[in-house]
Image (cartoon, rainbow, N blue to C red; front, top):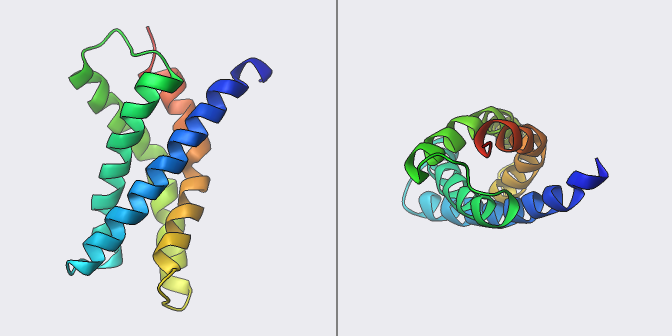
Length: 129
């Protein structure tokens, strides 16, 4: 595991930036009239795009596929961790009282929950040669 630690740390840092993008887009969607759940789908897609770009450049080497093929493979792979992420997000939004900070908290906790699944999927499914 030690040899993969720098890669895992870069993946986590990209994830933090993706989480910031996710929260920002979610609050924007909420301001534009979306509900928590539909807004989260949109914000998740924005975060996945950002993390793909960051992970492709800094965490892993780009695969031998075209960028277009790699993007779709990455998006598909992130849906596994995204399902875990969205389930945790939904459970928190449903069960906790509604406060201004609730969406941000729910996104952050959901992101942590899905991170392991996403790292493994990116490492062994997307960025392969």
